Each structure stands twice: as structure tokens, then as C-alpha cells.
Image (cartoon, rainbow, N blue to C red; front, side, top):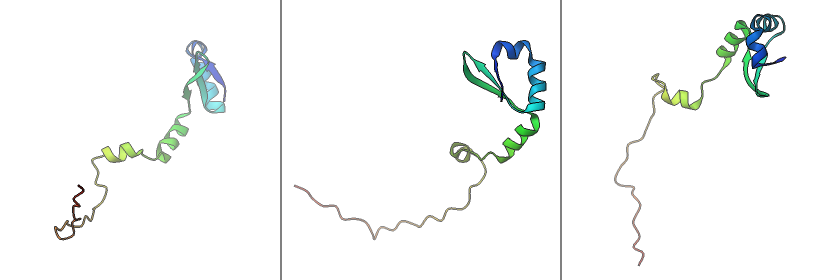
Length: 85
């Protein structure tokens, strides 16, 4: 995987794209740190299909997550309150 400084990536985008299609993902760096990755569309589609949703996404979804069998609460089995004096 080749790293491209953001200035080179902007100036030579066509070359970066051709390299991506020929060799695979290409990293774009900003101030020496990885900032983005250019990947072929087929690889991106495969990654999206195999990605699992995060817990946050699962909790915020409108889709049903299944039936919950919550037992009813009865008043008979409550704990006794102890008086501590």
C-alpha cells in the first residue's frame, strides 16, 4: 500500500486512481499521518457487506429486535426493609 501526501494526491489524482485499481488500496496522508484510503469499488462493496453493525446502530434501529419475555412483577416477593438505628 503506497502513501500519498495530500498535495500529491490532489495534483496526481488520476495516477493515484490508476495505481489503486492496479495495485489495491492507496493511503492519503496529511501532515505525515494517515488521513484516508482510496480503495477499488469492488473492495468497498465487499467490506460494506461483511461489516457488522455497531451496538449503537443496533440500539437505534427501528427494526424489531425480537420479543422479550419479561416476567410480571408480583408484590409477594419483596425484600424486607431492615431498620438500622
